[in-house]
Length: 159
Image (cartoon, rainbow, N blue to C red; front, top):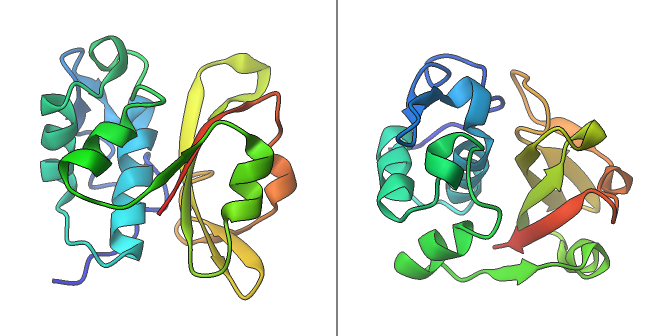
């Protein structure tokens, strides 16, 4: 079954699903799950969003029971458990240099004003970048890598 990208955690039908033991809605804390889901869709890996939520919960990936969303370095658990090749970066420079054509990236960065973290999925095609869930939308949006700054970058994954 062909899955569709999710362009924002506030979009239905996923926005009111709950994540973690805190039972917070995906619209508030689900960006990590959405970014991972989009990366899997991009790679052609079949995943049902609700199954992915449960799998992440079972792997202990919600941060403080989901109050703060997903643990920044928690995605490694999912990739390892499911034998999905990935590289993890803590250097924004190395991450940007490695995000070449045909690659999919997941960024975890501080929001403006350091008000929480945000995960988003970006892809590179023909030297241009597109974001699936940097902001809530109904389509992939053009993305400038300059938006990923060293001060806000926490970690990144490339598949």
